[in-house]
Amino acid sequence: MSKKKIVLAYSGGLDTTVIIPWLKESYDCDVVAICVDVGQETDWEPIRQRALDVGAVSCYIVDVKKEYVEDYIWPALKANAVYEDKYLLGTSTARPLIAETLVQYAHKEGAYAIAHGATGKGNDQVRFDLGIMAFAPELEIIAPWRIWELKSREEEIEYLEKRGLPVPMKRADSYSRDDNLWHISHEGLELEDPSNEPQLDSMLKITIPPEKALDKPEYVEIGFENGVPVSVNSEKMDGVSLIQALNKIGGANGVGLTDLVENRVVGMKSRGVYETPGGTILYYAHQELEHICLDRQTYAFKQQVALKMGEIIYGGLWFTPLREALSAFVDSTQKTVTGVVKVKLYKGNISSAGVTSRYSLYNASIASFTTGELYNHADAKGFIRLYGLPVLVRALMEQK
Image (cartoon, rainbow, N blue to C red; front, side, top):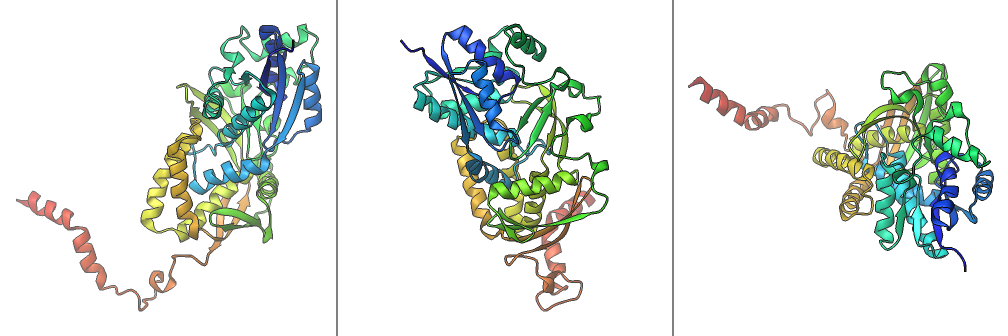
């Protein structure tokens, strides 16, 4: 009789490489490894072979980059969703799509369970579990870090070495990393002490430390249609190519580095360094365009939505009615967010170098220091008196 199957979210890293033989030993099962390609800069064939070498019966490489950009990154960007003022949700936006893909292959393979390598302290266990539950509540979820005896990455390395299995990393480079088209995150080693300065020279993968970046500014023009980026320097691009292009430009200019001590979903604080060069440029440019295309009340309320969206996405609640409703509101605000934003990049900094839009609400006749026909200075006196009426009433009361 054939053994039961467990589908594993396989990245090729240390955790998921250890999980394959551990699942086989612990559950007497066949393990089907699923590599979900959300834009990791990697050669998938050696990773596929690694999964087979440590015991997987098969390994699928599933390319979902297009879906990731269009269905997850763009909605977050249009919302200006940021977590705790800094984090552009690189890992958070990818996990729901990975979970949905795992469910699809679990059904295809007839698996009874899905396993993932998220730790019992991290956010990803929440994101994976909720995503799987949303599509397949009947499937068992196995998270080895929540139940096995291994307590550290050093013990994981020893686990593989004792069994004569390949170790997919060097001991000196044992940062815990997550990378995709949108970002690369780094945790562990010296970052576990917030008083330590990040060792950027040995850590970074796609971004140059700002002090070593280009010695002259670089200008970039981003074209948007309905809030979605569509061109770089007047060249039309699909979403995947556009982000890849901006990652190279931003990385060369030291843009998009974030060092954050954040509040995890489970309650503890953790520290990570994030590289999001292309995403940082896009968030900045998109917000600059909104400043001239959205009226005051819409922009102000959208800021509140952005805060909530950041919390929802970070917390793994992508597949919820509230997230869908907020995205619907955001989409309605983006109908006029069309135009071109020019930005200047220099040694880690971004500044605006001009914004144009056919939907611009900026009216030079009204805003100029030169008085125009559309604005009468004398009208301001009555407006201010009515606007400040509560101030006046309170002052009269206090005089009495």
